[in-house]
Image (tube, rainbow, N blue to C red; front, side):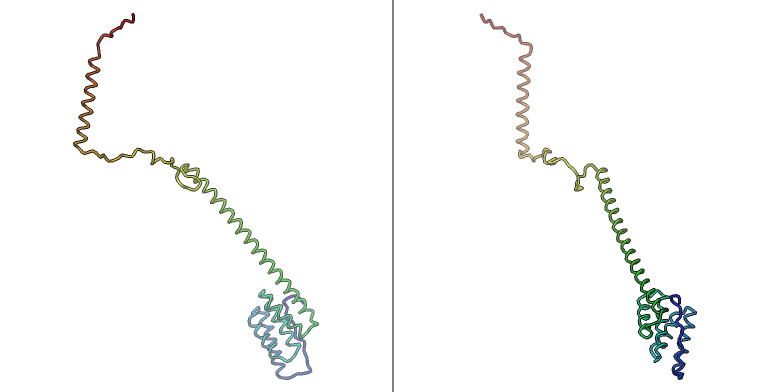
Length: 211
């Protein structure tokens, strides 16, 4: 039997009672829904049959098919659980053992795929972060080249003590009258020096005899 196929009900004619026939009809209704791929309705019929039937074979077949509905939806944990429950009722079922092994293998594969995907996403995030860090570093270097006045800390480079070297104007401590008197005195001194120079111009140089 291929994986996911409906498990046929083994007829037990030793107890042909009305209740048993009702459970079998419910089971067959679940099979009809399963063939229509309406797994939700099929699951409901199988679950009610497995819960209410006293027939071991009917419960085993119902649990097997519940597992099938979950496997069709790739719900591996639920499928595994119901196949195991079916094997408790019918330990010799090769079909159930096969489907159980298949569901377990698919679960493991799915988990490995998820793990690999997460690892790939982590690697991609790490690579993206490295690229971003490199780009930020490059942008900082480019900015430093464009603005030579900035040092490594991004502060403008200015000549040290430039402001301190500038001559500072001091407020005058002289009154206006004192300033005028000082200016007049300087003018008089300059006038005297000019007159002295004028007198010395044109005068013959006296030679002194040294004998």
